[in-house]
Length: 212
Image 1 (cartoon, rainbow, N blue to C red):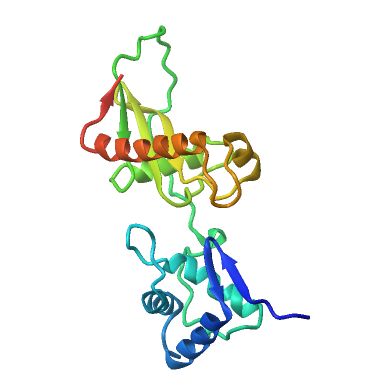
Image 2: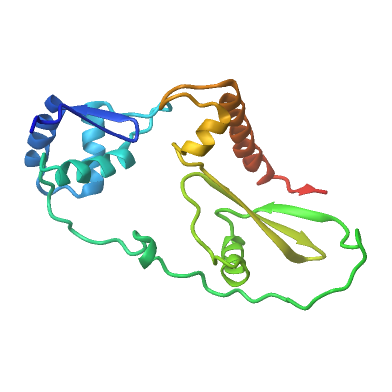
């Protein structure tokens, strides 16, 4: 069976020459943790994102793939971090609120406030409400994400969340006209602009809540 000449993982391509370099690098750093090793490798190989940040998360996925293929041998796992696996992540604790029903005419709620709660003291309330009242319970959003609480009459009445989309999704890519793994269409570019605006708007609204 012919040997694989290149490997590709989440947009990062590595050839046999780089695999050989990885083997030597790992042997030279036997006491580095997986986190530290991935960052050291990215710095050595120049694996960086467009914004200059290291692609260490991609590297931490690429290294086990190469180990499963028998190309490299990683140092033994030094310790397991609690919450690293979804099955080990603790469930949100209950935060109790007034859930009594209120009869009110349409439009009788008064001003509605939308509050960005990610990385604030109200984030546990958001997670608790999702855990208690959403039929799928709470799951941590993947990648970049935003969390909002909607307030009316001093009570939370809704939870809103956005998270990063999958890099590749065949049905979506066909719909927006994305071509291949790197092709772009106007509709795809428009959607990227909308996502960027949403992320920017979320940061702005952290300073000033929007009233409807």
